[in-house]
Image (cartoon, rainbow, N blue to C red):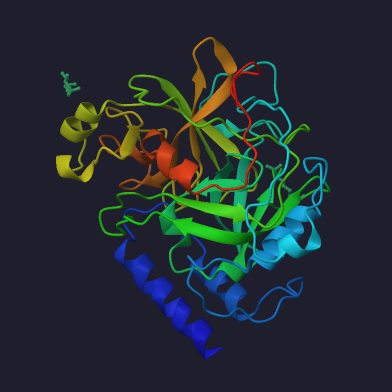
Length: 357
Ligand SMILES: *[C@@H]1O[C@H](CO)[C@@H](O)[C@H](O)[C@H]1NC(C)=O
Ligand SMILES: *[C@@H]1O[C@H](CO)[C@@H](O)[C@H](O)[C@H]1NC(C)=O
């Protein structure tokens, strides 16, 4: 228990430091703290133990759960080799990333999405409470922001997929435990630079089957300047508001680095090359807000209005939807090599079926 209190103190200090900016959930910190001190009865695990978040989970549990996985696994590894080997070898199904589960796109002004429209949306739960969002990028990894996971014990993290209305979860919801967390080595909690992290799930997901599907990683060296993007999340709908029940989407305009550096209230040095700004400088009005942290900023492929790539991750902003204060996102295309290096053992889905694996 004493260790838990220590950890909470660390978290509180982190939050106070960064109060103005980060889009982590803050509206209900009291409730959230209470849930830590008085965990919900559904949690049957032993009291959490403080461990480094970068610690590898024993390879026994991760690889043995890999071995028990569903249709994506074509063979079980010999029992002896499951003890110390991750990743294990397996055959990957052919699948396509980034397709939304709806035929017609609506005009977007900040409203509820259709159920499972964005099938890569991941809810990150801390001690079974909503904390942040992420995006499924393969059958085994969720991409999110570092500020959601820094200092958080691995044992507390659950990831939920196919959620829509958080107050009314249904049978389709799929949950996985975090088996490993990788926070970017150069994450800077003060400047918010390199705000990116990966969660490895304890078992692969069946991404071959609708409705679950990973989003595509962004095209290398593509800037997204001037393109329309969609940000989705369960965060507050206005500054100081509470997280919403059902998944919301809003359309925002991607700004050039120059515009964001020169024409926003941010100091030009604050916007690093690892960030991407989106919003409306003159009028504000559409933005991510607290509770949306880690969620996707997606842009559809040219000529493919129903297929999306992950341009950014909700990171920070001054207030929400204020004029001259666009949302700032982690620029995922800066991290393609880092992602590749840190996602061993997964099966990827490709943007086009004919593409080489
Ligand atoms: C979410 O579910 C709750 C509980 O069933 C319901 O009261 C609420 O209206 C739902 N919200 C939306 C936006 O559908
Ligand atoms: C900044 O805003 C002004 C006025 O709207 C505009 O003329 C100028 O082109 C903008 N600068 C950049 C770099 O976009």
